[in-house]
Image (tube, one colour):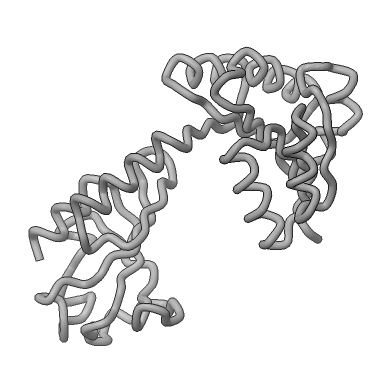
Length: 219
């Protein structure tokens, strides 16, 4: 059964999230106070509604408690609205409330009023892009929380022909290899510790952020 996800706020972040979730098979109910944004989202989401999410009766009509998750993606100019919406969603029994924060203070308030998870898209993008600039071998980086990252990285020349047993990455750097992509567009395979690494391999690793530069410099 498809996940049912309610997205409130259709700015750049909310709209991109709604589109991606829809493309991946989720049943998305998209909500915004702006009619033009709702009409745009209606082309690809399951349902799109013009609605003021700070109005308790209107929000209750969406039955957030019956959704698998709710994302409060209200934008930069409406911090008060995002806080009110988050409070109401928790009161209405939404099982997972993910709220967008614009700055550190906003993030602290959203946490205090009960958001289960908080995202700051601009901050997270900035960190990922910084890693791409600093470490040219990093292809993709996803924050898993609590300084734990899932990263795809090109293997270093010194790794070619060696096995994961030879490299001893968990012991040396605290890095776990969870997959290997063979070729730039190849499928990801489960790593075999005794298979030699090839020139075009990418490693899918789980590690702390600080382990990545240590790996690049240390192998």
